[in-house]
Image (cartoon, rainbow, N blue to C red; front, side, top):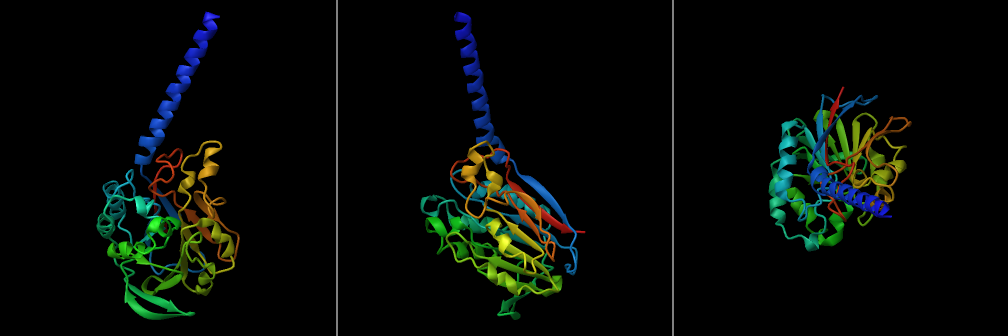
Length: 297
């Protein structure tokens, strides 16, 4: 009897120690990691005019557990990649109404992200054709659902623009010097997302779609989309049985992390970035924060 009780106590202690180590790793170790994923694209019929270097990041979810100071490391890593284009895929602040930080500090950090300027000449599409010309920073963003929720809707665009990012609201921008066209789709959950805005993408340029939610790609496989990038899922954030499904949000239950290739006319490639911050719980497990660098073969 005594031996049985002793064995049970040892097992309980072992389980408690294992749970404590798992919690410590998920709370402090993995959220502090920052992985760089390098993706080499082999374009099909339409190619960029030059070998572009693109960096994407998403889902910062600024809060008390992910601050502009934490973000500085990501900024340094992005700049070290010397990107031609930088895309932010939404969910800037986790809950704006509860955020105690200064949004200006976020803008200042975003402004420290630099591009080479090779795609500085841009044209906004009007209808089905390119319209007014503008100078582009090469930094583009879209809304995520958290950018509408929590009171951020009226401030998100100003914060991003103060950081040098052009926010695309169901809009398309042509970069003639790079033979690239970019469509940014608004958030689909709370916002005003319209996938049909990507239907005007031309056949003779390399076409990129920015969309916070990845699952909407299934509605665009008949369009001239070469490459779509999304965030939203955090790669599952906590990949444990029964828990990961609870963290998968609407429009993020099919395509969760990494590359997905479609067998359509353009051989469209979707990449889902795991993001930088956390939501609901300040934990990550088997879904480390990620920056993605895309280059062309």
